[in-house]
Image 1 (spheres, rainbow over the protein chains, first blue to last red):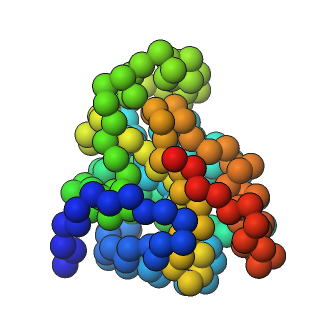
Image 2: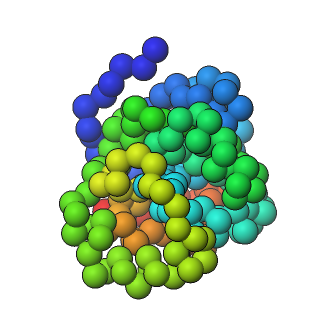
Length: 49
Length: 146
Protein backbone atom coordinates (compact mmCIF):
# COMPACT_ATOMS: atom_id res chain seq x y z
CA UNK A 1 0.00 0.00 0.00
CA UNK A 2 1.41 3.34 -1.00
CA UNK A 3 1.27 6.23 1.36
CA UNK A 4 0.65 9.56 -0.37
CA UNK A 5 3.83 11.55 -0.15
CA UNK A 6 4.22 15.29 0.06
CA UNK A 7 5.35 16.98 -3.15
CA UNK A 8 9.12 16.91 -3.12
CA UNK A 9 11.79 17.84 -5.62
CA UNK A 10 14.29 15.12 -6.21
CA UNK A 11 17.78 15.96 -7.35
CA UNK A 12 20.70 14.14 -8.91
CA UNK A 13 22.27 11.97 -6.22
CA UNK A 14 19.04 11.32 -4.33
CA UNK A 15 17.74 7.80 -3.87
CA UNK A 16 14.75 7.16 -6.09
CA UNK A 17 11.50 6.46 -4.26
CA UNK A 18 10.22 2.91 -4.44
CA UNK A 19 6.55 3.30 -5.30
CA UNK A 20 4.33 0.37 -6.18
CA UNK A 21 2.25 0.82 -9.29
CA UNK A 22 0.29 -1.46 -11.57
CA UNK A 23 1.70 -2.06 -15.03
CA UNK A 24 -0.06 -2.38 -18.38
CA UNK A 25 -0.57 -6.09 -17.76
CA UNK A 26 -2.25 -5.49 -14.42
CA UNK A 27 0.76 -6.67 -12.43
CA UNK A 28 1.73 -4.77 -9.31
CA UNK A 29 5.27 -3.55 -9.84
CA UNK A 30 7.72 -2.11 -7.36
CA UNK A 31 9.46 0.67 -9.23
CA UNK A 32 12.69 -0.43 -7.59
CA UNK A 33 12.59 -3.56 -9.75
CA UNK A 34 12.78 -1.40 -12.86
CA UNK A 35 16.39 -0.38 -12.36
CA UNK A 36 17.78 -3.57 -10.84
CA UNK A 37 19.32 -4.90 -14.03
CA UNK A 38 19.80 -1.75 -16.10
CA UNK A 39 19.68 1.99 -15.55
CA UNK A 40 16.15 3.07 -16.33
CA UNK A 41 14.84 6.16 -18.05
CA UNK A 42 11.56 7.09 -16.37
CA UNK A 43 9.27 9.24 -18.45
CA UNK A 44 6.31 10.71 -16.60
CA UNK A 45 3.84 11.70 -19.26
CA UNK A 46 1.70 14.78 -18.97
CA UNK A 47 -1.42 13.24 -20.32
CA UNK A 48 -1.90 10.81 -23.10
CA UNK A 49 -4.97 12.02 -24.85
CA UNK B 1 6.09 14.66 -22.62
CA UNK B 2 3.16 13.82 -24.70
CA UNK B 3 2.35 11.16 -27.20
CA UNK B 4 4.74 12.65 -29.76
CA UNK B 5 7.74 12.36 -27.48
CA UNK B 6 6.80 8.87 -26.35
CA UNK B 7 6.62 7.81 -30.00
CA UNK B 8 10.03 9.42 -30.59
CA UNK B 9 11.47 7.36 -27.74
CA UNK B 10 9.84 4.22 -29.14
CA UNK B 11 11.47 4.85 -32.50
CA UNK B 12 14.88 5.15 -30.82
CA UNK B 13 14.29 2.36 -28.29
CA UNK B 14 17.07 0.15 -29.62
CA UNK B 15 19.53 2.98 -29.08
CA UNK B 16 18.46 3.20 -25.43
CA UNK B 17 19.06 -0.56 -25.08
CA UNK B 18 22.38 -0.34 -26.88
CA UNK B 19 23.43 2.36 -24.42
CA UNK B 20 22.87 -0.13 -21.60
CA UNK B 21 19.59 1.29 -20.36
CA UNK B 22 15.89 0.72 -20.61
CA UNK B 23 12.77 2.86 -20.56
CA UNK B 24 9.54 2.97 -18.59
CA UNK B 25 6.53 5.24 -18.98
CA UNK B 26 4.37 6.41 -16.10
CA UNK B 27 0.91 7.72 -16.94
CA UNK B 28 -1.96 9.27 -15.02
CA UNK B 29 -4.40 6.84 -16.60
CA UNK B 30 -6.01 3.73 -15.25
CA UNK B 31 -4.49 0.33 -16.03
CA UNK B 32 -6.95 -0.09 -18.90
CA UNK B 33 -6.19 3.36 -20.34
CA UNK B 34 -2.47 2.77 -19.95
CA UNK B 35 -2.65 -0.61 -21.66
CA UNK B 36 -4.68 0.88 -24.51
CA UNK B 37 -2.16 3.71 -24.90
CA UNK B 38 0.69 1.19 -25.03
CA UNK B 39 -1.07 -0.95 -27.61
CA UNK B 40 -2.21 1.95 -29.77
CA UNK B 41 1.29 3.39 -29.94
CA UNK B 42 3.04 -0.01 -30.16
CA UNK B 43 5.26 0.76 -27.18
CA UNK B 44 7.77 -2.00 -26.42
CA UNK B 45 8.59 -0.90 -22.88
CA UNK B 46 6.78 -1.17 -19.59
CA UNK B 47 4.01 1.34 -18.92
CA UNK B 48 2.83 1.98 -15.38
CA UNK B 49 -0.54 3.34 -14.36
CA UNK B 50 -0.53 6.03 -11.69
CA UNK B 51 -4.05 7.48 -11.63
CA UNK B 52 -3.56 8.80 -8.10
CA UNK B 53 -0.26 10.41 -9.14
CA UNK B 54 1.58 8.87 -6.20
CA UNK B 55 4.80 8.43 -8.18
CA UNK B 56 4.43 11.87 -9.75
CA UNK B 57 4.38 13.32 -6.24
CA UNK B 58 7.12 11.06 -4.91
CA UNK B 59 9.43 12.11 -7.75
CA UNK B 60 8.38 15.75 -7.48
CA UNK B 61 6.88 16.08 -10.94
CA UNK B 62 4.93 19.31 -10.50
CA UNK B 63 1.69 20.70 -11.78
CA UNK B 64 2.18 23.69 -14.02
CA UNK B 65 0.36 26.93 -14.51
CA UNK B 66 -2.02 27.52 -17.40
CA UNK B 67 0.71 29.58 -19.09
CA UNK B 68 3.23 26.76 -18.79
CA UNK B 69 0.79 24.32 -20.29
CA UNK B 70 -0.80 26.44 -23.03
CA UNK B 71 1.40 29.51 -23.49
CA UNK B 72 3.09 30.72 -26.69
CA UNK B 73 6.23 28.70 -26.06
CA UNK B 74 4.11 25.60 -26.37
CA UNK B 75 2.16 26.46 -29.52
CA UNK B 76 4.68 25.61 -32.22
CA UNK B 77 5.66 22.27 -30.75
CA UNK B 78 2.04 21.55 -29.90
CA UNK B 79 1.07 22.03 -33.53
CA UNK B 80 3.87 19.74 -34.66
CA UNK B 81 2.83 17.11 -32.14
CA UNK B 82 -0.80 17.34 -33.15
CA UNK B 83 0.05 16.93 -36.81
CA UNK B 84 2.17 13.91 -36.09
CA UNK B 85 0.28 12.11 -33.37
CA UNK B 86 -3.27 13.37 -33.79
CA UNK B 87 -5.68 14.87 -31.34
CA UNK B 88 -6.99 12.90 -28.42
CA UNK B 89 -9.06 13.62 -25.39
CA UNK B 90 -6.73 14.48 -22.52
CA UNK B 91 -6.76 11.97 -19.69
CA UNK B 92 -5.71 13.14 -16.26
CA UNK B 93 -4.95 16.53 -14.81
CA UNK B 94 -4.26 18.84 -17.74
CA UNK B 95 -2.05 21.04 -15.55
CA UNK B 96 0.19 18.15 -14.58
CA UNK B 97 3.60 18.59 -16.16
CA UNK B 98 5.82 15.78 -17.35
CA UNK B 99 9.25 14.85 -16.07
CA UNK B 100 12.23 12.70 -17.03
CA UNK B 101 14.62 10.84 -14.77
CA UNK B 102 17.39 8.31 -15.07
CA UNK B 103 17.92 5.97 -12.12
CA UNK B 104 21.05 3.83 -11.95
CA UNK B 105 21.24 0.23 -10.79
CA UNK B 106 21.92 1.35 -7.25
CA UNK B 107 18.68 3.32 -7.17
CA UNK B 108 20.46 6.67 -7.38
CA UNK B 109 18.95 9.38 -9.54
CA UNK B 110 21.47 10.39 -12.18
CA UNK B 111 19.46 12.74 -14.32
CA UNK B 112 16.50 14.99 -13.66
CA UNK B 113 14.58 17.09 -16.11
CA UNK B 114 11.65 19.09 -14.79
CA UNK B 115 10.25 21.19 -17.64
CA UNK B 116 9.81 24.93 -17.73
CA UNK B 117 6.71 24.45 -19.84
CA UNK B 118 4.81 21.59 -21.40
CA UNK B 119 6.92 21.52 -24.61
CA UNK B 120 10.24 21.47 -22.77
CA UNK B 121 11.74 17.99 -22.78
CA UNK B 122 15.16 16.38 -23.16
CA UNK B 123 16.07 14.96 -26.53
CA UNK B 124 16.62 11.27 -27.01
CA UNK B 125 20.28 12.01 -27.70
CA UNK B 126 20.62 13.77 -24.35
CA UNK B 127 19.10 10.81 -22.49
CA UNK B 128 21.18 8.28 -24.41
CA UNK B 129 24.43 10.13 -23.66
CA UNK B 130 23.55 9.97 -19.98
CA UNK B 131 23.05 6.20 -20.25
CA UNK B 132 26.32 5.80 -22.13
CA UNK B 133 28.12 7.67 -19.38
CA UNK B 134 26.62 5.32 -16.80
CA UNK B 135 27.54 2.30 -18.88
CA UNK B 136 31.15 3.39 -18.82
CA UNK B 137 31.05 4.05 -15.12
CA UNK B 138 31.71 7.68 -15.86
CA UNK B 139 29.55 10.11 -13.95
CA UNK B 140 31.08 13.19 -15.55
CA UNK B 141 28.41 14.99 -17.44
CA UNK B 142 25.66 13.97 -15.10
CA UNK B 143 23.69 17.09 -14.85
CA UNK B 144 20.60 18.31 -13.21
CA UNK B 145 18.15 20.19 -15.36
CA UNK B 146 15.59 22.34 -13.69
